[in-house]
Amino acid sequence: MKAAIIMGSKSDYAVVQKAGEVLEGFGVETETRIISAHRTPKAAAEFAEKAEENGIEVIIAAAGKAAHLAGVLAASTPLPVIGIPMKSSTLDGLDSLLSVVQMPKGIPVATVAIDGAENAALLAVQILSLKYPALRAAMKEYKANMEKEVIAIDEEFRNGK
Image (cartoon, rainbow, N blue to C red; front, top):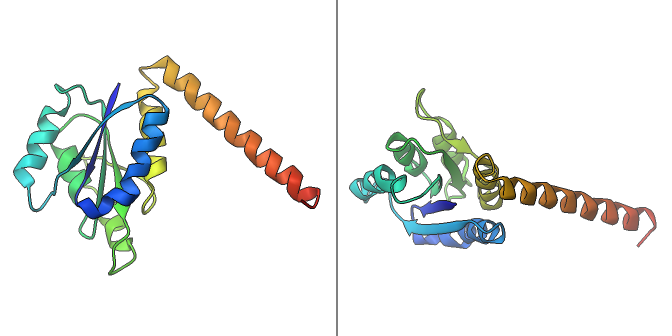
């Protein structure tokens, strides 16, 4: 099982690395690249066109401002693409969010919150879990552990700790 994490700029790495950590924690192999939809459009199209034959099963794409990377990749592959809109200096990421979420009919991109790398990775794991039952079991365990943590925190809170 393999996922790709593509970022439009090296400056996105501080956020995007969190997706890699989540995927690694679930045992998902990742390929991480910097490919710009605008500065390297041929490389973006070529990557997406060859992703499936290179063993990639889901793509996470992070970009800011105009944030066309996820859409450019989705246009060139049948694989699921998850877009991470990155917080930008101008409009706090709202520009990125709107660019990623407003895809034309026929080119879907799943979109997570601004800088939502962890959720992008978790969504990728859930997509992959349709094919890999061990991932589904790991996701169930992850959610059960999350529930236990919240219950424990609530209990401490109620007991005045």
